[in-house]
Length: 311
Image 1 (cartoon, one colour):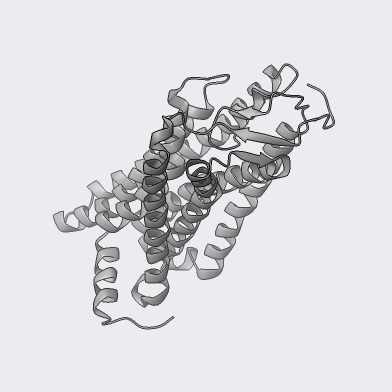
Image 2 (cartoon, one colour; image 1 turned 135 degrees about the horizontal axis):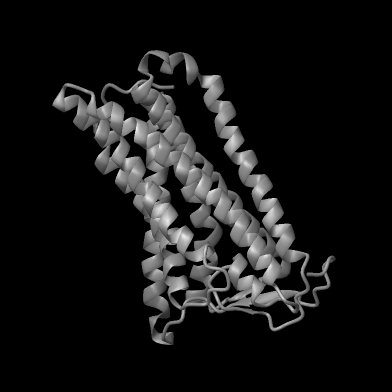
């Protein structure tokens, strides 16, 4: 590994998804519809939580953050992909590639921390209900949410600077549909074994730590739920938690597949990456609205314009 940016590359070419030319317009339309649904679905969740006073609780405050992150992650990736389908515009400047990689890992890492925070919130609500209101105050929620953004920023700064201080001397074709760490390392002029190992350890430690904390929280949660005597109470508690667990699985499984296999170049990587960058942000609002009775009730009140008070 060398220090200093010795790059002679001024731009990169995103190869994108491998598809026959005649499928360009159909793919453009399909991904455009998915992007619109993602933005509108997550935007609807944010709007509903803001206008319905019954949802002014920490759980839904964090859900708003999750929806905003899903919207921005999708916006960091999909528009460039759409331009490649329709206009065959696959060129991205060196600076644009840096910004895209930083944005994606900043938002993705922030979301990873947020999932952990949401599990902790459910742990407090179910296992320590008498102390919940005094612990999860509005100011505490704000500080915790800010902490996830700060953590995501620091992590992404490290990863981005670690990659782009390496020399890129050509070729400049990124065999991927966006600038991401594994794809960019293949274009570096020197041996990247150390970089691949550092990326594996760094992201692996982050993912594993957050995942263990989530599993630990839900271990206590399940034990507490099983002690509830009311069958209806157990169903309500499980219903609230299964939505969060579902989106955690949707996030962690593909993320682990991509980043915890150093040096991987399997074609399946692109398919998995499409899932967690394009489809996962669309699935999250669907999962939370279908699995959460309070969200469904709030959407019903919003549709009927009844029982809603302004913030």
